[in-house]
Length: 328
Ligand code: 2P0
Image (cartoon, rainbow, N blue to C red):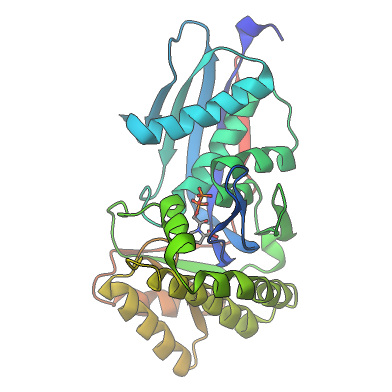
């Protein structure tokens, strides 16, 4: 391929929600997590990103959901594109157009699907024929949770690993995750700063990092055994351990709203009434509820009735990230 015929690459990556959480960095420069994590890729939430490197551009042009990015948000993405340019020996700037089909930067893992789609589209647009694990390692540098979004089903980012790996295919254990949307607004404190603050000021952070590997093993073991209750209990425990470390930061890092608590209460009541359901929360007020598909409709109906719930997005395990090329 000559440099005048670089293609436009369009990638789609699905968001993911960690059942065993990542929170805190073991190596900031390489963006390696301090905890192992395991997620479910989400069928209903995705980012679509096209990238083309063009000779006539004098800077990267980056549009997210129809709006030109500027400032720090743009800088984070141009730094990532610089890395791709270096890897490809390329000097051209890029035209990037990205779209999320769900609220951005609100605790629904838009950075996971976003950096995953960008890593896949940008490498292919730059002519780099990377294997999925190499794209995953690159995406991780942009945002660690993005390493997991390259793969469908259930995916782990093990402690110290450069890239994520699939633990189980989605159709081998098709659970449902009900994403209860509590706000459409972006969060006040992004994950990267939030975890640095927790790491620096929370006396519970070391306890979180110490306990995370055993909880990760519980999540992984229960998933492989298809033991729903054990999986759900370990999933809730991971989320609450992580949030406890945030609450104990100074000043506290509280991503919860009254609706978050009302949803947790409702999940607990549903369980007591014989409908197995388990909750997890990320860096935002939304509550994601893990259920078995045959109970999903009843539980969804109950969660929609909780005051403050704006929507419930029903997800199955999502697919691998994909990419198409035009003009190659
Ligand atoms: C996770 N989260 O495992 C955890 C649970 C949020 C709470 O990964 O600094 O956007 O870009 O590597 O990946 C969100 O953190 O952070 C996240 P960076 P990222 O899904």
